[in-house]
Image 1 (cartoon, rainbow, N blue to C red):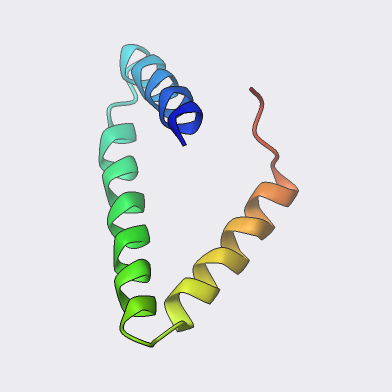
Image 2: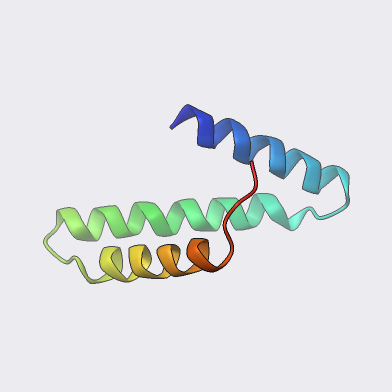
Length: 67
């Protein structure tokens, strides 16, 4: 997990330096979505979790990240 956090932090820092300051807001929103999905799954509702995973897989399959 630390690898992905370092990679993301580096990418956000580069975006901010390039004038794309909405990267922080987007990162925060994605984290809030992830947390909400985890909480709903723990409460017995897997719908948001399953939708999030399907969408994330589809996006990453079509646009694989470069490391």
